[in-house]
Amino acid sequence: DVEIGGEQARFKLMIFPGPESSFKKSSGKGVIQMKCETVLPECFSCISFRFFVGQEAARGPATNDFGRNSVAGLPRDIQHWCFLANVDDKLKEVVVGTEIMVTSQFQ
Image (tube, rainbow, N blue to C red; front, side, top):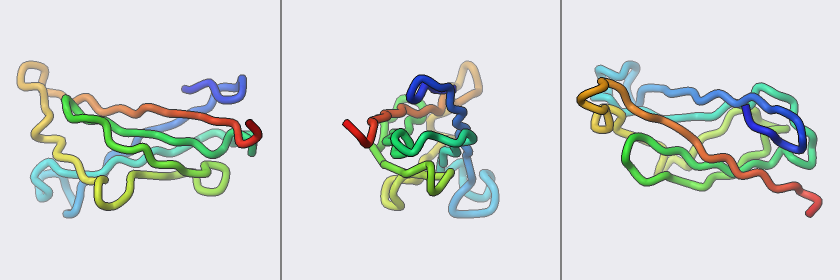
């Protein structure tokens, strides 16, 4: 959950294999999308975000009006990640996250 305009907004990261139909067929590669599950006030619906995976540098920012389209991702030329290359060998997991930047449209 993220506080936006004094209210809590729920976002969910969705990870999909790509370009094939499974992570195994895609050699651990895929894309990340972010879904807003809360109706945002219009003045706070345009949100910029960046994604990061493992130790790779964050990519973005990208901007989306979540009041009009509840799902967004990075531009095509930077949307693919190699999750397999970022797996922590000791923990057998990969860290995936986002940074969200909210700016009121009325500032």
